[in-house]
Length: 366
Image (cartoon, rainbow, N blue to C red; front, side, top):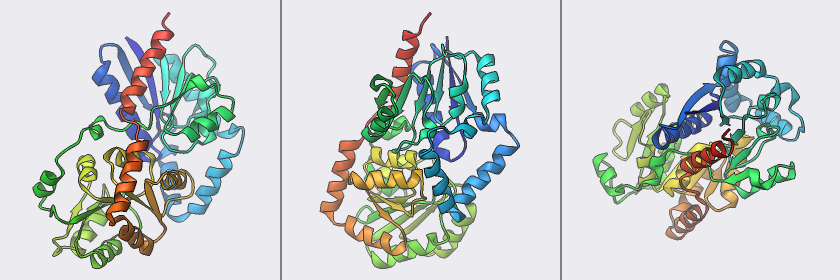
């Protein structure tokens, strides 16, 4: 039985989700060969500090966007993220010594990996965005799993050998590769099959206070449109929308749901934030995107990549959302975006990454 040390981080749900998808894939296909040890490294190393840092991280998205962007780009252009690499390094060394893994798989940028002295343990990084940041760079890493040619080129510029980079895409849940009956799903949820359906995702942490206003504007401007609003774990937002649209048959309000695949595959347009996992799920579901007011940093870079490749539109405010919707509701525009998404989608990323990791373990067998 080989041991995989799977490192993640709870600064944003995307890293946790990717880690979960990789773990589930190992358990499904290689349960008799692999023992996965999953750790939220920073939470385990700093149980009191991490919750505070997480709150500051989320707070910065809403109130200090420019500062967050400045720190992101400053780190991106810094050749040696020296201070950050010592964060959690001692705990990591102890964890590796105790767990004795055969391979380390990281779904979170962890510069402390560069400080490990036992270089017999291969390290692989799964980059969870469509843009490269130097915090992902690990000294002596055996493999980098990426989603774009651009990320591969960035790594090559930093003298990473070409054979160490594999373009498999961002790991999402396997179910997104299975198609479903869209009309049946709409009927089962008491929605109209002959109306345009706009899916609004407030994300794991909710969006701005304009959310309710946005729904009203969409309905007013597009008479034959119904809205499905996913509020996630934001109960306050869900309660507000249920009051605001209590008598509105063209609006369905949901809280947290395990059925994002079903909603993405039945809606005509998704309005969401530009998190790496969310837009990868949309890519698999072949649903055109409007990326709302991306935060400077990885969100903005993800959004720009999708727009550049004809898979999304970026809207900075409510009026731009309405303009984007008007454009997307033209059949030719939707067809073009759907074609671009099919062209750029890399299916079965979780399985392909796990299969490659098994190959690395076989190569390093003693």
